[in-house]
Image (cartoon, rainbow, N blue to C red; front, side):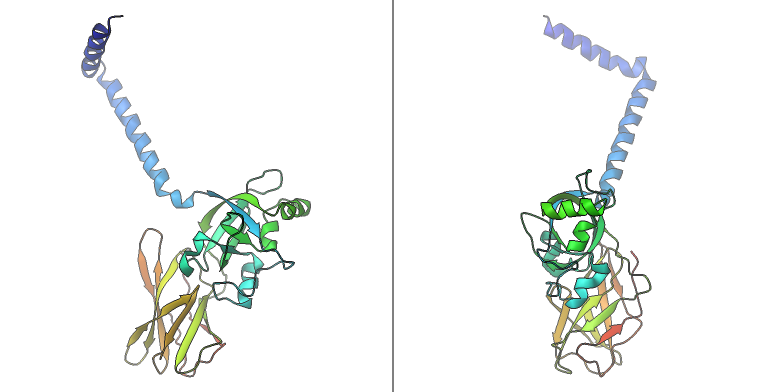
Length: 275
C-alpha cells in the first residue's frame, strides 16, 4: 500500500475543506464549542452530583442517634432532625462538617427509594470503610417499605450515594447553647444549633457590645467554640460562613448574649441563613 500517496491525498483534502465547504467547517466548530460549554456547565454543578460510598448504622437498639457524639450536641444531637442523624468519617473535617446535611440513598432498587433520607452530621466515626454511620431510624428510612427496611437492617452495611444539601429548620433561628462546663466569667463554651443552608461556620468572634472589642474563639472540638477569660458585659457574636467555592460572609446576630449568661442556657441569635 502506498502510504505516502494516501497521506498526501489526506493533506490536500484537509486543505480544501475551507474552500469547498466553509459552512461544514463552521458547523463542526460550533458543535465542538457547544459540547465544551456543556462540559463546563456540568463541571460547575458538580457539587450537586451524587458520590458513591457505603453506610452502616449505630449498633444499638435506639432509633435515634447517640447522646455522646463528637460534634458536642449532647442529647440534643440524638433527636435533631427527628432523629435522622449520622456519624461521618472524612466528611467530619475536624469538626467543620458538624451540622451539615446530606441526602443519602441506598442503591439497591429492590429495597431502596430514589429519595433516600436527609441526615444531619452529629458525630465522627466509620465502620467497614463507610462514610456514614446512620441512626437506625435514618437507615430504615432509605427503604421503600417496612419490610424492605427490615431487610436493610439485616444487611447492616449497604452501598449508597450521597450529596450535600441545605439544612432546613422552619421557624427556628440559629441558637447557641452554653456548654455545661462553662464557668462565668472565666471560661465560656457553646455549641451552635439550627444552622440552615449548606455553608460552614469557619470562625467565630465574641465581642463586647459597648466598645466592640472582640476575641477570636477556638474550635474546641466539633461544633463547640470556647474561650478563656471571655469579654465582659453583654456580648455579641460574629460568625464567618464559608461556601464550597470559597466565598465568605460574616453574619452578625440581632440578639446579644446577656451579661449574666449561665451554663446550660440557650440563647436565640435572632438570625438565620438560607443558602
